[in-house]
Length: 62
Image (cartoon, rainbow, N blue to C red; front, side, top):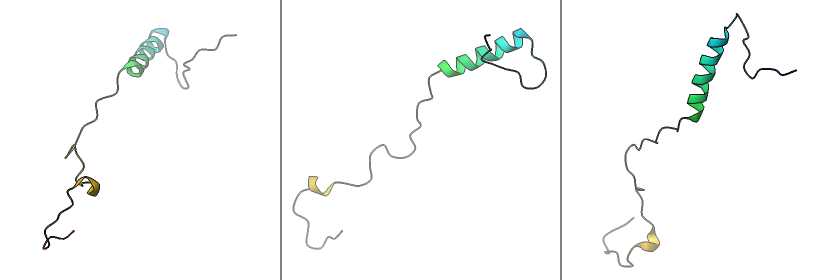
């Protein structure tokens, strides 16, 4: 016996209604996810110390 992949839990759905909801679900599953939205900076706000020059002014601090 072949069981359907989609089942109506409550009420009665006509075959056309089941086909419509199946088409919507398949279209959503095939759609590409939206591109991520960048908020704020695209680069890190900190610097790597090993990439900086060796000299720092005597009056500067970190």
